Image (cartoon, rainbow, N blue to C red; front, side):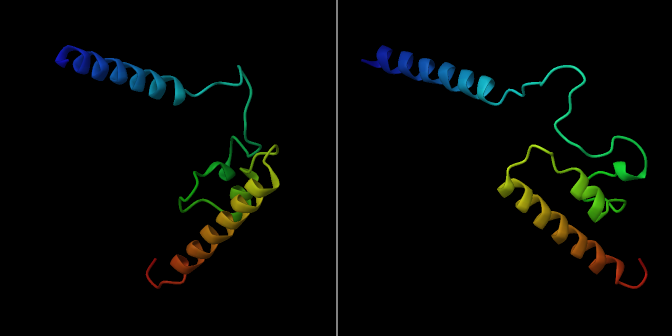
Length: 94
């Protein structure tokens, strides 16, 4: 009975690692393709949430093939981030 239990635990462990390994894999769309429509060079290339980021740059990073719900959520996030940036800029000594 104990052998079956150890075998079952090992089998489930292998299965769990396989599911995590294949389930979390990132699939490429192929060479030279990009999922985003934002700029890739210049000042507008600031990373999301950094001081150099702007609302327009954030909006430009929303993919063109986003669903309406994804677009609405991303737009709301960009607006929220812009409000946070303005609040930080309002603090004296920054």
